[in-house]
Image (cartoon, rainbow, N blue to C red; front, side, top):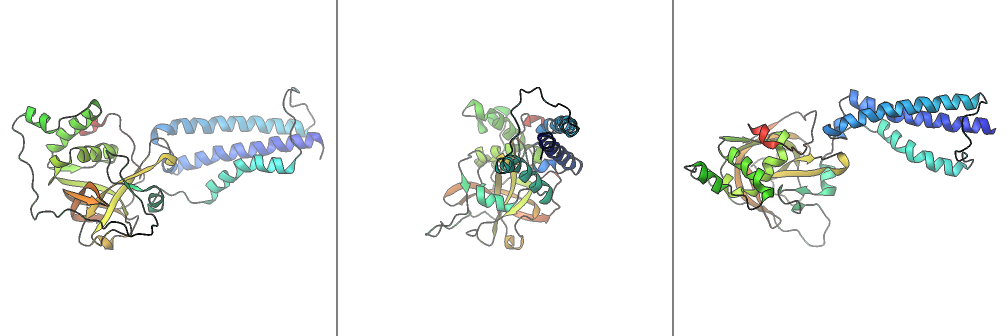
Length: 315
């Protein structure tokens, strides 16, 4: 192959790769599956990147045609293109392989399989408290859930705003927002865990757990179960994403329900019940004593994201 044809081939291959990445982003955006990989606040940057990639691809295509027609395409200051088949295969393969994987494999949300690898976090305010499925030589501790009374026990409402502030006293400045959220949630008849402030609500309940015992609560998520859970237990979880799916962390709440075993993994459900004390693998957690579980359709945006102004969602 002549030098001109070799240069043209390299430019053409770069054109195809860049158009491939640009087109893939457009396809994900049009099919509303970009949310499986990127947080909403990052989407604008990815979409802009697809336009930039398209422009660069057009330029590379123009350079490929110039080389094919035998016209000069460089200022003789670039590194000469490699003639090594192995080197070129490795270099371009690092770009082509993930592109092919993206086009060939179906676009799906993260599921229980990823939870089993990362571990489910059952304490939103303590990131170190996770439960993971691992192979051990000894049997894991038996999971237990604190017994719930036949009628929920709700603490007497505070008489004044000062009493409420004392009930949700923040020990440090980092807990002040949770304290304010707690005072708002405490006044509600039913705590609805909105996806927009999923982590913030669970963190507040976990931090001020004693104040919410007996409170009615509703939340949605997918079913996750470990082998050492009893037949009346499963976890309703969601993946929290800060930037992209690579940093996704699973968070959830233990559910106690007589027919819990009939709900398979990854099924999306809406759970209604009351907050109760409980424990799992030696860790004190809060559980939901469910009174009703409804099967629902998976939401178009299955992940939850950090909310930097959670109080506005509660107003």
